[in-house]
Image 1 (tube, rainbow, N blue to C red):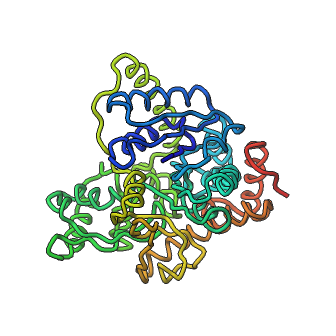
Image 2 (cartoon, rainbow, N blue to C red):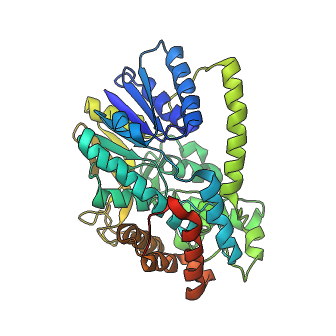
Image 3 (tube, helix red, strand yellow):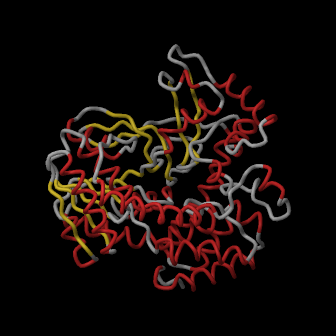
Length: 440
């Protein structure tokens, strides 16, 4: 069996996913095809994967494919394709996504999921992923496409609607959501035996139900402890998600630094005191990129000296999905899929939603969740509107659709007037140059 990893220069990520596969009996003898356009990063990943393989007794076959000219070879005959690319990298594209909006007074924290940063990232990534899917239809039409690339709802939603149907979007925030809030309020004793229901959209899916092993609702006690902590602990740095509990009634999957920019409430130029009060880390993603690049260089040099030490299976879904498909052993995930037949009844069908899915030998089976609480669904819809308009801009290649996507973004529209949004978008399109398709 062949498992192809697109964007294998994402070395830490490829180490986790392929390491998981090598620790899975039905996957460990696979061919792992590593593809990237950066030779240095590809070689680093090959070295790490080879070392893991050697540590386990060399059960797998490792191959590498460099550059667009070898992309079809990397994909040919694959049973599963994992996507972890970052088009344009930290430099120049991430820097551009942050610095140009900053000139217009628009500040961001992460910029990879929504907001003007998420819009631009989607517009430069979708054409590349569409090329992948075109090649897959030719050389591995029966493969399953596992997308890990942000902005998750925009890219996965586009692929599922226009490019490659057998696709699921994956994010590790679902696995850690309930445990995070239980630890945050000192209720760790329920972490292992809890029962939960999570549904919504990627990075803003709601922990709708959380119960103990006997079916007792844990939310009343959680809400009481959250109110107390927000009132008493001024150093508390997960405030945004806990304010969601206080005001909207429910906790959500992704971190407070992410969610601070998915709404108009926290990053406001007229209320700069909110940044310090709620511990909002502006420019967090560029700072994180710099630190990750530095720490990876240090870690890589150490790995070359000390080699691979014992590793264990991570919480990522990819290997467990492949295992479930191959062995026909059912496994539950939180997956990003189209809202076909109104899995979430108060969202449009073309939205990309994050809902519980059963995986077995036939594939991915999404679960119908029903109606989300009105306020939670309404906040999600402000994000979905921007996501759908960005997908339309990626399809139409019209500048006006890019403007509309930015105008529909809740944070951007709360800070900037229409003329300024248009001017900022034009400058971003020009700055990204060949990383974007041509817009008319």
